Length: 115
Image 1 (tube, rainbow, N blue to C red):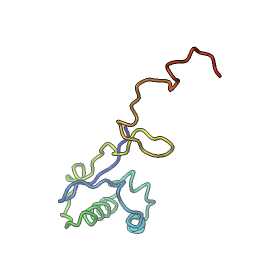
Image 2 (image 1 turned 30 degrees about the vertical axis):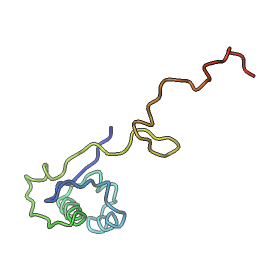
Image 3 (image 1 turned 135 degrees about the vertical axis):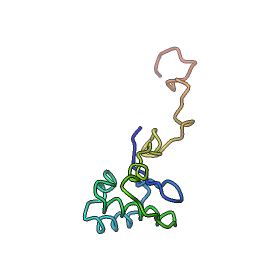
């Protein structure tokens, strides 16, 4: 399973993959970096870390706390993504839908000859 970055805010965890596009545009403008690079390396630069942390706090409607360098490791954490593992025709399937009984789908009462 893949991982993604999440930010720990005063109101809980916020996944970077949940940022709306308009927030990604704001992060690009604030950091001078492309959105995908910000998402992949959210604390590569102090300015990026601060912008991402503040954006996550804004999404959860909480006041950002003042961070110090030692807190970065605990503030930014990699978590397993929450995307489904099974898709059919581009549509996610639940685990129950993805399990089969092992049948090939062929009728059980055939003598092997095709008609």
